[in-house]
Length: 265
Image (cartoon, rainbow, N blue to C red; front, side, top):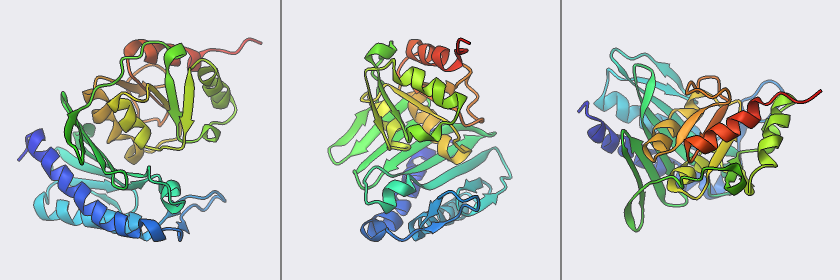
């Protein structure tokens, strides 16, 4: 069962298990604990913990040699090339506010590199799966191929970021240069914005400060749909958490050029 198509089927079982924990709790999700100790608000709910626990139990039962790195319950080392990256509830703030765009992020890594991604949007009833050249959306109408829009220029682009106030100082100035160059912007969608980029209705996502569990599932989905995802410096190492995802190489390059631009003194 080492082929990616079979592992993608298993990843969908993980998403089903997470849905069984998150959906019943969604309407009563106002209670959240703050796991930050620096004065900020980093919420965690019983849905986060319950869904990660359910996914980990399946992985441990079926693939005991696979590693697991989860946002809430820590790391289990791998005894082979495969490991799973789990973000049980990306967009917990949206979840506790009763908004529907929170997602579960599931990635399979081979030798530390993400090769399979699932972005599951339970409340919306959509699931985005990407690996290799396969990119598909599963919803109540069936299975649909995913393709980015191909938008090539900022002047035509639809931009998203989770929160424009995530950027500080020089980063804020850099993001504002991009924002002032695009057609329209929408905020607050967390990982769901990358799913919609893969589906062709968002053209550009720019973010900073992301952790590996925030990123790993996004990379295979965006790339399998024909998109480009890399960093603010113009290469494909996303480990630093400063992410640019774009519907074409041309659009990615335009955005990176503005992000790297040295302000005139």
